[in-house]
Image 1: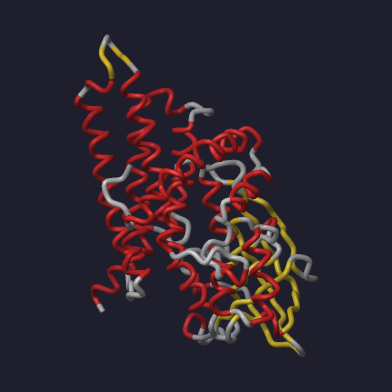
Image 2: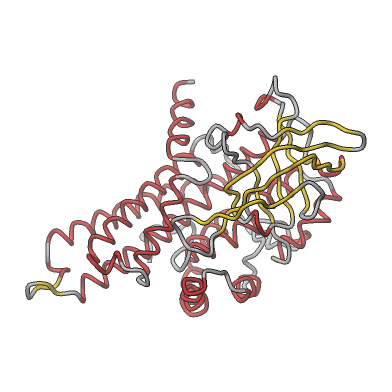
Length: 381
């Protein structure tokens, strides 16, 4: 168990959460790897535990949990399979939180209960072919028409976009202002005329993780699809991403912890040239470096979470967390593959799958370079 815990109360919850993950979710992780799909049983089990919609209020069907509890669960499920973290994020992450924070009463009533229950799926439509890290450069446009807005443009690499019932789409409403009040957020429903899923992509990670290309061609939505004001979209998107960084950080720590545990077990059992790997100093130092990095990252995340729960202004602490934890898990994964040798490269071994899946964390929800830019900008202000 960790040397540092987020709080005594959450420390008491960890053993039960870990047992559930190991006993109930881990068998599904093997099924996900075999089939390349997330089974309905995964949604059902997470719903049974009350882990879907954890960050949404109880009146919206959510769990009413604080960030500390959410991140503890995120950390533990990440020890099994990254797909489970995506289910938590889909019901408590970018789009659901934005609707909860900025939505009208009608928007909340329409979407939040279904999202919290996992019966509806949401996606976050920000990235475009010419606007990844530089999201303010997006080309998707929204123009006022009678009774609403006409959207034209294309979003790509949208996690879960191919299956989403609602997509929060960011679009330029004032090209002169762009990120300074010229971007809006729209809740676009599946089946809206002019909205199509034009491609489904997969990554180097699990085959079950699918990304959608979403095309909008004279897609007209009503005024009731607008989230916040016509110039609030960029701020809404950035606020959602800032919260999401803490969940990503927790997932990185959970994945790193599992990789270290697998490496320790392998080193204890594997012998070469008549000697256990665990007795070789080169292996011991790799294990020690991984353990030290995990504990340092965990301590900083937990300190940040305590401040967040207390209502403190976090500033760039979320960027520091995301940068530190995503870079850390990459190093831990690389050492784990090295310790496992040939076995670490073989499909069917969890280490190989973890190695591919965790590479996403240094890119998604703000690259390491973007986090460094935000941290440096704050230092030099």
